[in-house]
Length: 238
Image (cartoon, rainbow, N blue to C red; front, side, top):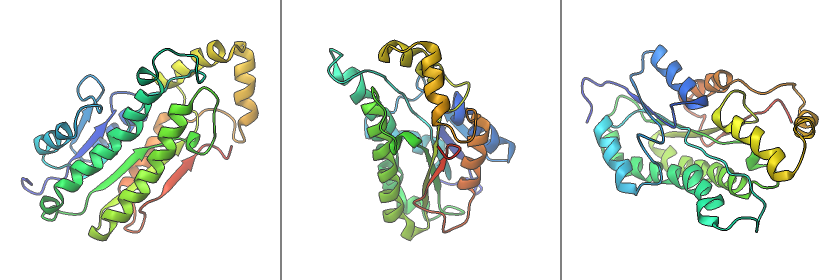
C-alpha cells in the first residue's frame, strides 16, 4: 500500500479549529495530508468506513483525531439523551476507538511502511475537571484519555506511538462559540457572570490559540520514540 514510500497524514476533524491548524503545519512540513470534516467523513459510521478510508488514503503514517462536539444540558432536562450527551460520546470517543481498531486491522501492511505510525488525539482538560451540564463531554474525554493509553500499550510493542493533547478553553473555534452561547443560557447566568467564572479558573490569562495547540500536536506526531501513551495538558495551569 506504499507507493514510493510516501509518508502521508490524515486529519479527522480538520476543517476548523485545532485540526485545521494541525493540517496546515503538516503540509507546511512536507507531509501530504488528507483532511476530513463531519460533512466528508462522519465518524459515527460503522468500522468498515474507517477501513475503507484507510485503504483509500494508502495507510497514512501521521494521524490526528480532532473530531469533537459538545452539548450542554443538565441531566434530566432533555427529551432525547441519544441525540445529546450520548451523541457526544459517539463522536469524541467511539470514533477514536474505531479509528484505532481499523488501523490495527492493517498492522501487517504497516510493517512495510517507512516508519511506524504516530497518532495524536485531541482530548481536553475537561477529562479531569467535572463540569455541570457536560456529562457527555467530560465522560467522552476521560474515556478518550484511557483509550489512548490502552492503544499505546497494545501497539507500542510494534513501534506505534499513540498520544493525546488536552487543551483548555481555546479561542475562535466553533466549539468555543457554542459554549459561549450555551453556558449563560443553560446555566441561567448572565454573560458577564459566565466570563467571570472562566477568568477565576485561569492561572495563565486568556484562551489558547488553536495554532499554539497545533504546534504541540505536530511536535508530538514527530516526537521521540518513547513519547507514547502520554496525555499532554495545555491549559495554562488551571
